[in-house]
Every structure is written in C-alpha cells, then in structure tokens.
Length: 246
Image 1 (tube, rainbow, N blue to C red):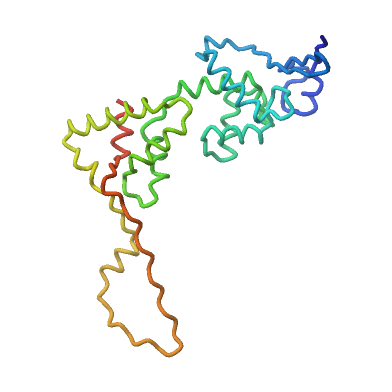
Image 2 (cartoon, helix red, strand yellow):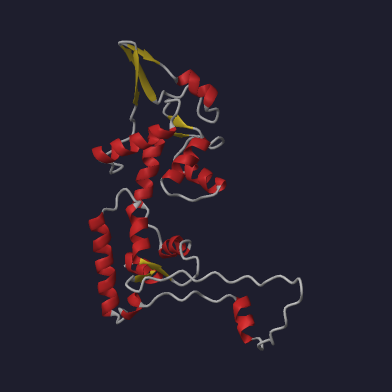
C-alpha cells in the first residue's frame, strides 16, 4: 500500500494557498486501483455535522473536485454554490470563499474549509428582508403573493426540507392567518401591479378608431392572460417571512 503526497502539486495548481500546505487527500494504490480519501482535520461534532450530512457533503464536493486533490479552484466553487441554490455575483462568491479559506487571492476552497462554510451557513438564519427578496424574484407580476403549489415546488428543492416539514410550515402559517382574520386572502387570486405606463394609458381619453389605411399593418391581437386556478391557495410571502422570524 503506497501513499502519495499532493503538497507539491497544490503549490502549482492553487497558487494562493500556503506553500507546503499539508495534503487534503490521502491517495492509496491497491490492486492497481487508486483510492482517494479526503483527510478531515475539522471537528465535525463542533460543526454540528452528523455522519449522514458528512456523506452528503462529501459526495457533493466530489462532484466538483474533478482532479480529486481535495481543493476546489474558484470556478469550481462557484459551480458548487449554484448547485446549492446560491445566486450571487462573482464578487459575492469571492467574499463567501474568504469567510473560510486561507486563500485570499485565488479564492480556492479546501474540503475542510467547505465543511466549515456549510456549518456556518446552517447556523445563519436568513433575515426577513432576504426571505422577501427570494420570493419577490419569483413574483414576476409584483402581486405580493405566490401560489402554494409554487411554494411547495421551491421547498421540495431543498435537501433538508421534507414534505412533512412543508406541511407543518403551511399549517402554522394558515393558523396565524386565521388568528389575524386574513384567511380570505388565501383564496383571492393575486392582482398584478400596474405599471406607470398602464396607468397613464387607462387615464387617457379614448381615441376614435381610425380607418385602416391601405397597405397598413394589422394590429396584433394581445395574447390572452394565463388562466388562474380558482382552487389554488395563495401565500402572502411578506406575512410568511415575518412568521419565520417570530
């Protein structure tokens, strides 16, 4: 059984990291097959990462650690962030890397730094404004609401959110709405907010339709509005965000 060092290789590939940094992986060769194992130097109990979470995080990290050196370059880290659902600029991704990485120039992230990063993210509860921003990005018509079906679809994409968790959240949300006497708002279809241009057009005096000139273009028929499911329930996401903060 042979163990290969990767410290010199890291000096070349990840130039922003300390020289002669201890290797992040242990490579062994057995029966002509290479085996790679990440070397864990952080305290998983302190980071509140259990065995199942560790296995999931390790599998996720390996998807982007293509050269299996236990360290992601910045582009690989950006892709991993997008996979986790983060929608951030390059500068924001760099800032996220520097919260855990010793590499403040090339923004590489080792496996141990990634574990620390995920632990910090789990401890950080999003504030009300952040939650509203997330839901607003899905509310294209600026109605202040999203459908329950859309909400469920979004939450199902979260690895740590089960169907039972979603049901419990909605049950509590609807209970609070009932206490506030706002249950009627659940069944009311959202009304798209009018733009300034739309309001100006509505306030204009109606024009007498002019005769169509020869060779003139036929006015385009506006596309019909999408049908709204009358049985759908609608979630006021500002109310929902406020509930999560209480």
